[in-house]
Image 1: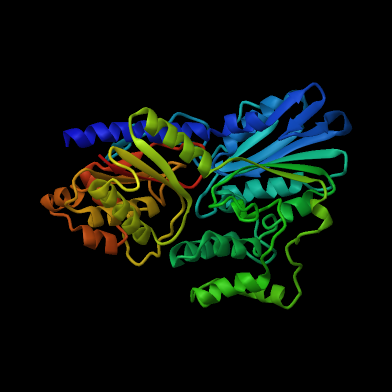
Image 2 (image 1 turned 90 degrees about the vertical axis):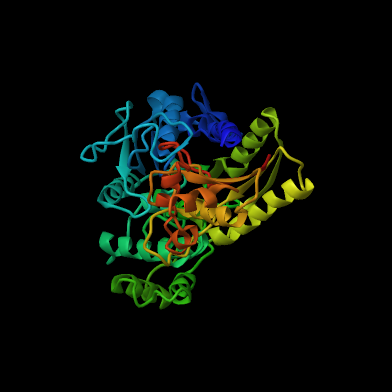
Length: 469
């Protein structure tokens, strides 16, 4: 364990570098600046003298530092703003650590008070994720009202980051919050991809799928986006509230059919989708819609940026390092087998890198939930990797959720090595049984192998580190 402890410390430094590279406030300031009455956004110039009002709206786990950075840039030109963030994701401290419990106390928030901003014109609303809640609904309704009756003399700055789909829950007419919560839970458990998930959410919403842009038109609209989706497709990140939607009611209905959950979905949602299929409900705005005429969408940070920062730090610490891909998708336990195979190959043959080596993979896996256990996709990946690495010395697979919250847990991920399974069995744990029950959290907690960061206030997918020593 002595050597493993040393390598874990280096991994903590590498993960810290990755997270620091996608700090949302810094990402905003790299793309947005003000010089007098001129506002510059990613090379495009706006004359603030031409606008009577400037609003800030949005949703996502990185919303707090993004909003405060924009408010700082705008100064006296900010009229008002409402941004929804995940409970506890008000800008605070974080650090990477391994253990059974967080080394830092959780950043608890008084949920009865949703206004947590030093800027009085900017309201930061804490809300539920991944299942939407009443606070999120109230915040989304306020955003919807704020965008009412805008003119060409208004400028809206929209801030979007990972988690925005759940954090902007404004259901279509006839659909209740309870219905939306039930739908979200079904989609989370069925193994649907994020694109499929969002195709459904867009067609049950009044803000998603370009509908925020439709609501804001004819105002000028700038959307700053911190991407949490593989490849950063703009229509998928937070369900694309400011982007033309290529999906249809037929696509949304087809997802429910394909995963066999149509009968379990609330009747109001099925009825709404069927009305859409019949042309009785307007489609989401498509490419070429005039509501996008004055829209600028800018990706200010993504998984690739974090991955390359991790690579640079790994090299500085003496690893041979390579970013292998930032397009990882698929079932977590299947991806884990590939990661384990890469670690074994590096130990055995020095391919693709000779030890000490660190391969970096980015993306987002999925978990088809069949058990009743507790965990998240990163913990599940690490548990499956541990089984595949059993007995292989000098190997390690670390899987990290960059937002600091892996599934419905307080852990950000977990670490697996060639000794994990033996250590677990010595404690009377059955790794295969825990995997079958989707129960990775208590497994790694017993070993002290969970990763904790606390809320990082950013979100750019997951990072997986495959190491050979």
